Length: 504
Image (cartoon, rainbow, N blue to C red; front, side):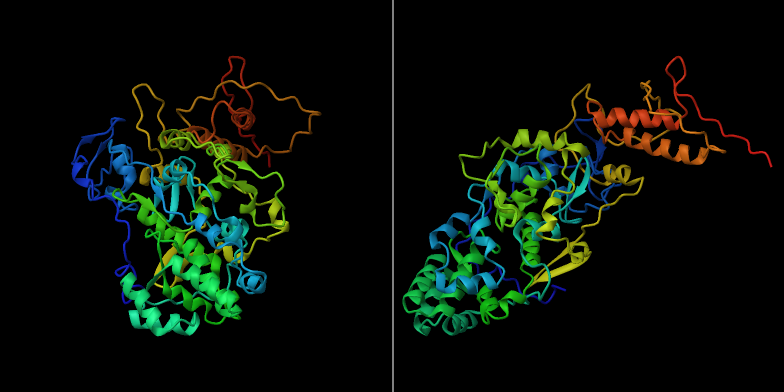
């Protein structure tokens, strides 16, 4: 779908280049290389995989160039530089009252109030290390998670249904035409600006000046276009230049009466996926895009990892992202290594799987959020995979094809890989009896197969170490397993439930 789409990034002026490739300094992967955990690995073409995972490299085909591989091999990468333009939104301020309705009608007004003020490079870097472009998911010890359309809708109240704009790469002459037609600048001025930027780009400061001049001239529709161009290029479409905006985005505001028909939430998700893909490469040192979406998504789903606080006066009718305070006075940033350790220690009880349950009265779940397939906005195409693999064998497969831990194990550490569940070798510790209010009448026939199926599934979860032994849920599952197995003998061993004979 993208083979014939020209590369829009070729004429980007003064882009901050990433640090040159450091792959030369990284130890070359060869067959029979010993990892810190004693595992053997080889090139991705080899079936043996990599030390620490993935053992089967057929899914994460670009793992050799992934930052997780470099980190595991001892090649640390500094925390990513967050190229966020949230502060530049404050420079232009809120729209003047005369255009406030025009801006709000596009569905983009949450960008004004929800843009992050202070980014947390360590937190973002720790999650980027776990992003894989082949699956468009974060790979964690608890499985795969990803930012979904429902996250975008709940956090930002962006529309996730509507048209997907088909941007195309602009020549300098096409950019000049858009500027003269939609911002009402003289051809000479537009040509001078594009010449200065060496392509279909203009300076953010220049756009702000155009906005102020059109407001003074009471050219409200033109002023609204300039404001919206500045707004989306400081947020949704932020690039690494920190100075220039792409004129192509102005085309989305040609007819402000139709701008509200665009699925801006889809645009936010696509651009976030695209930036995560690039940032997960070993040599990348910066991440751009709408980082508000990523950081607030982490806040909502991983309360035990971050150290940010919520806003006490948050209005539930506002976008969910409005409830987070991100100024330096309310954030207690920690360095990347502790964040990494916290992510490695995650269990299923540390994750907020349904953070927007109470918010659904304000922003209802839309069925389109479950869409699985390709999403396109302009020249970018990504695959959305919101589904969660819930089969009994998923975690064993996941540990085989993935790299869920970032910190190598040390001698004496407990194994963190998913062991094969073998009921014959599994020994259940003794569990206390659970008192009940009354003894229900025994069934005519014990459902032996049902008890056995329950017991096997409980064993699998316990063996996979998805539940920490220190929490109450672990004890409850042990109790359930004991009951399903028929109780406990005097010596504390599990008593097998006997299949009852049925007389005909």
